[in-house]
Image (cartoon, rainbow, N blue to C red; front, side, top):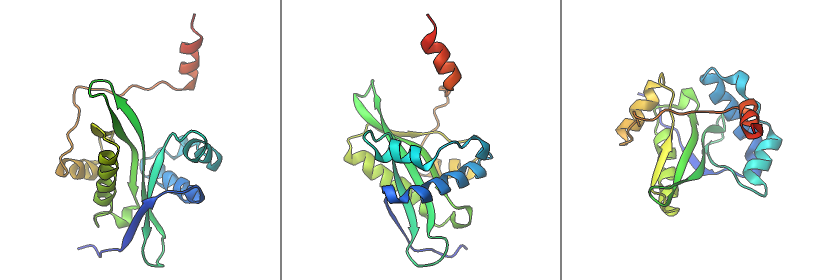
Length: 168
């Protein structure tokens, strides 16, 4: 049985950007995608805490002065459902340091996100999960989340976005 850990969850602030970006890099490393991280503190400052707030985040902090201080995060934003006529809370990333998993931190993050969704009158919450992340899939199913088997995520990267935008 894993030892419990005391933690708090709070909204990320501008001063947390270095720690948030560090956790994002740890997530990318876990997902074997570290080489794809091009985000910088400046970009996080501009896009999360600037004039336009394209994302929001929650940080998990160790309640004691033990190391590490930051145990995880959830980064989210709002989209809109044309069918429901309501906002959707989209969870972009949720990450808990591997050595702190199985202690209720991920569930606590999802609960605070659910409360945030309710406070914003969201019609739903959505997120993606890597097919191989079986522990996360088990957690999501246990909480009542269901996969959307009939949908496939598509992505355009900047060169193709530019090509599409400039195509006459």
